[in-house]
Image (cartoon, rainbow, N blue to C red; front, side, top):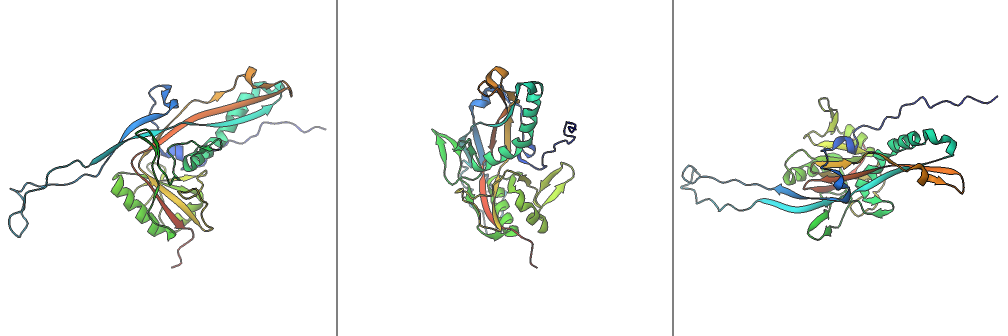
Length: 293
């Protein structure tokens, strides 16, 4: 007797605290972002001054304050799109369900694929995703910076020291709430050192100083030069605030997906993404494990 064929009674739930759910997603001004975007990135250093008539030093009259000078750096930055795709093969008999299966397949993989692309810069076997996290060289398109260099702040330190140095550099560079990008393998270490907590108001993971932690299931843990970390270690990165656009899900047309040689439908579901971030790109190499004291 043949067994009954049923629909899988399981609802797929993406992992929480991932990249897309932790970045800003402003409404796109039309579909042209899918050709890539350019923006002016302004990163102020700031400064202070005083009125010499009102100031006192305790050791005589204060000198004339220095001349006010520009203390806001700005540069043209750019980001390029990439596409996540899921392909499902079926017979024409399954046409009615083909799009649903393709959509479900994409939903199950796109979070991880987006995170891997944003960490490594790789899409379709080529490094064409800009900007991305693991980068040791600058990429320019004329005057536009597509890829800044990831600046390491420490190598091989325990996670408390490394995170402290990373966040101090981030505060000096960005001065607002930034993002700490970590592979999921680093979360137990952060928890053991009490360096991560759940913000009940936002449902997001934050560090003790208030930066958001993005725990990417697709984050590879590799260094700025793309090399794999030694056992028991990983790389983590910090950026300013990040933002992104994504398209609707697109499907291949039936007439384009039919492989007549095998009478098979090759249904594809795909979605295009573009992700950028402000000002900083910092890196730290950390040791995994629990405190020993």
